[in-house]
Image (cartoon, rainbow, N blue to C red; front, side):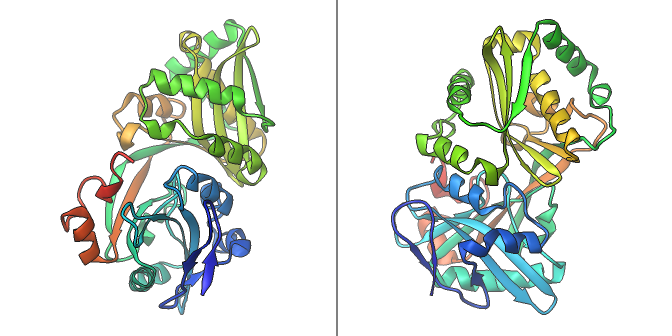
Length: 353
C-alpha cells in the first residue's frame, strides 16, 4: 500500500491497483517532466497549495500507468465526500488533466482508472483540461467531455512588438497609464500582504463568491512555495500607492495569469492594462513564448472579461477550454446525486461549496 502525504491531518491510504501506480511525492515533478507535461499547474507544489482551497482532508495524488504503447500520468486532488465513506477527485485550481506519451496509452487508461477508483472508493473525477498542453484528446474513454468556451494565449515570443499587436483600445489605455505616472515593477515576491488586501477589495467590489476569499494558509503557502511555483508579482503604483497588481506563475516557456487586483483609481487610468503589458514584456525578455491569460467568467467567450483579455493579442486565435466528467461508481453516484445524469454542475454535491 502506498501512502499519499499532503494537506490536512494524517495520511490517506491509496492502493495501487489495476496497473495504476500511486507515485511517491518525491518523484512527482520529475515524472511529469519526463512525460512532457511539467507546468506551474501540474507541479506537486501547486496541488498542495490548491488543496488548501478544498474541504479539510483533501490530498494530492499522481497516478501513473505504463502501457505497451507508452505512459500516462494524471494529477488529482482527492476530496473526502461530504457524508464520508469515500472521495471525489478533481483537478487542482486552474488547469490539469492527463499527460501521456501517446494517445494509445491514454485511451487504454480509462478502464484501469475506473478499477483504481473503485478500489479506493473514488466515486467521480472532474477534470479541467489544460489548453496549452492540449490534452482534451487524452481524456479516458467513458468520460463526458464538454467545451466551456476558450482561453487567451498571448504570443510573447522574443522579437514580437507586443504593444503594436494590441487592440487600439488597450494601446490607448497603456499610454494613459504612462501619462498618469503609473510606476510598474515586476519581481519575485517576498511578501503578499499588500496584494492580498487589494485583491480582497476587488473581490468585494465584484461580489465574488465566498470561495474566492482565500484563507490565510493559502497565501502563506503561495509565498512558501513561491520558487517552485514560479510566482511573479506585478505591481502598479500611483504616487507610491498600490492601485493595480497581478499574480502570475511561470514555468519553462509559459507564464500564467493567476490572480488580479485593482483599486477604483486604476480603472480610470488603464493601470491594469499597463500591468499586463509589463508582465508580457518581462516574460518576453526571458524567452517565454506564451502568456496564458485564461478565459471569461464561467468560460463564457462573450463575457467582458474574455474580451478584455483577448484584446491584448486579438490576432492570435483563442484556445478551446474543456472539462471532463467521469463517474467510476454509478450506483454510489446515483445515491449521492439523486440522478444518473452528469449534466449541469458536477459533481452536484459540490455546488455552492
